[in-house]
Length: 80
Image (tube, rainbow, N blue to C red):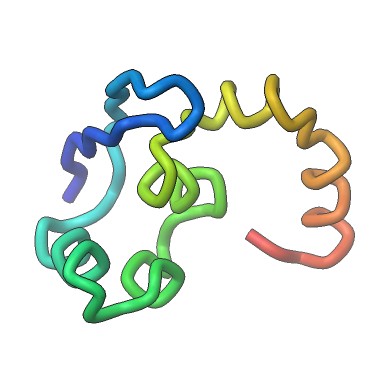
């Protein structure tokens, strides 16, 4: 079940939304500190989890941090 997650970016303080395949229960377990990010959202990729944590959209992350090298590392080491 996908829900719209709204987060404030730590980069520009603007609010952004993403449609993510998570439940309210998953989101609440992370936001309450009950579960770590990667444990609460094992089905999300790292950029989707980063959005939940920091409010930074994937395209903004790529632009600011030039993450092409990170993507190559992930492909080589099977991280996602």
